[in-house]
Length: 470
Image 1 (cartoon, rainbow, N blue to C red):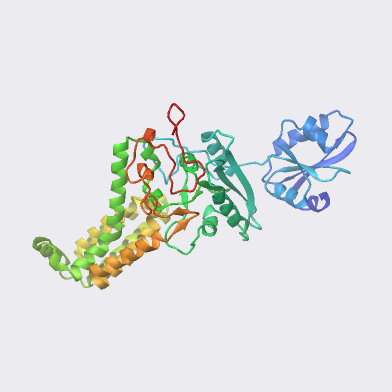
Image 2: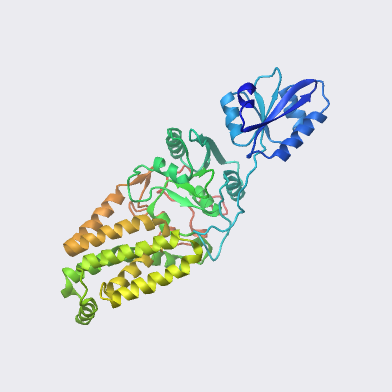
């Protein structure tokens, strides 16, 4: 085993003598903490013992280090490539692995995508070891289980499936682990690589797996009976099963008064409907059903769109395309140019285009309001953008009837989705009475005594009264 590894330029070798027997330590050039490795070698050289074997090393000498015995050559090389150290002794089979990896990771901080006013501000980082420790600090129970595996033939990325024994349905975790074991790919760089394998319909425009960047959200989902998939190298944690209404919720809902949290959730839902349907509804009324509009509003729209060279549908689609270009450029360009981009996008392209008669001000207002409403639910922004485009095309080509048919088709499609036994539109379809306590309306925590029945679990009781009864 040692002969193959020690000849590679990627590894660093240090020889020593232990109890009259020669040995060596292997580590990687850049991924191993060489100070810890030198301390280990010093401990071995200073040890006074008559026995020179791996058991003595592990039980009497290397007591300050995390160490394990490794017999497989493949497993040993995997540890070495990950940054661990390997100890070899002449005449002994296998080796001893030392956990001396050097992690260069950013500090735990509030994630930029999930900012809050109240509640914990710590977020996941790119180190899976740190992320697991953040979850373990939230859930201090022996029932917390972590199933580790490596995925990617060349990256050998560390992946962990986390769940709560006695809460999660074993069929959920087994289904997730089965899909992960079947992945045969060169490399896994981000958890998004895993999502396409974990989702039942990878070609769907709808999310079928949840994501989060905060340990309090991940812990709350584990307590509901979900499982979490952590991937080394990314702060994004994937949670399964998934329901559409997860995107309507925010971690801050649980740190606010119930009445205000319910109001905010209703606002998000209404905003999503406005963002999806407003452009299509506007085009349908302007082209096919203008008689429905009040006379004064109709005159205002006609006056504002007078002289516009494009038909209403093309005008709306052009403005939508313009807004998407501005949004994408604002995200991708250097941060120092963000202010200049906002000025150019809002003033030059928007106001100037209206004054030049290329587009009408109602179209700009409708698309701007629709875009803002769409991003009140940022996790669903991708699918919402595609749906908004489809609904707009249906309303512009077929009027309100086309818009209604397209909305019904989308609803029937999402009702057919299922995520590891959890209905996609739970708790509304099918209706679950107790789940409504944490649905569109938010009940106080003291009243939510059962876990969501729409999520498969083996323990429905979340909290009990003083006499031990649910």
